[in-house]
Image (tube, rainbow, N blue to C red; front, side, top):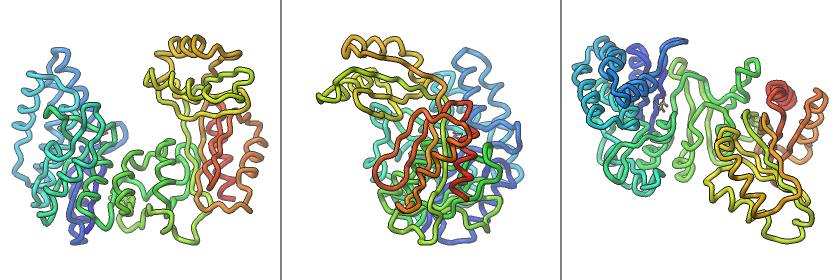
Length: 436
Ligand code: ASP
């Protein structure tokens, strides 16, 4: 049995709904269907979830939420109308607007895109609607309660021959609605796949799979046909946008492969994501390259600290105390560099620098902004390829200064720090080198 998840562009209008039904009905194993909210129909169009954010803002500021809701209602009414479904979009919209006037809750409002999409798809496929508000649970800290969720979904779904489940949201301990971060329907899809013990999790999008590099930077990068969960995790964490970075976890733990597929081109084999042990033998050595801009490096130096334990632990405790997550921690002799997102550092930069000065009295403490991190990933890189050396030489030959290098032991996961201005050039160079 297969669990399928369709993203926003796959559900953008009635003709996309038709494609989705055809895909689902072409394989009887495709029983459980997770849906996003309708996305963009064309460049410049607005996603339903973004429209709903606007509705919520109006409601919060005492404006005309009903007016902002109109284009949302029209989108659903048009889909229902063209598909000949008995669906009262006006009535649904009124319920949402009136709930918002009693309590303008952002997550509730944002979740209604998936809710209504699920309602429509359930009618269209003739499969029961299962509301994740009753089966996907977050704890008091707002963190997904995976064991409780999997148990509840399993109980609700295992007796059914199929169902439609909206993605993106669940319930708080007090019965409110909470959404995942943007793009989170991918996580719901993975949870459903794990809960029902699917043989495969199909994630249907508008591309033929994961690309080996960002197509906005590299001209027509190739599609990666086969990669490990770990490679996917690293690439999506670093910015490859094919799937939510947290979505692999539930299926990975259950050993369920993921296939990324294109709703507009279903005959393409897409990208298959599997455990390392099941990677195909003839695969490319280096899987891909991804990166992120907008980072800062905080450098702390103090003589002789490498002789005693505790300096690094104390430093990291200071970040923890301020709930400041960082990307990397690099250490040399008597020096530690913390790489952190600039937008997270900025609001509390003075405070954290003050903490470090007070507690650790460093000899040098400075912050450099405008840095990018580029990650090159490959489970299959044999020692003999000397890939790290080749990459450093190629990047260096372009006159690009490498400000940080991070490579753990084991297979290739090389992270290079370069100046934001050199980001595109470095990515292009790396891509050419790994595909040479
Ligand atoms: N509709 C939500 C978003 O636009 C969630 C999703 O599509 O996965 O982020």
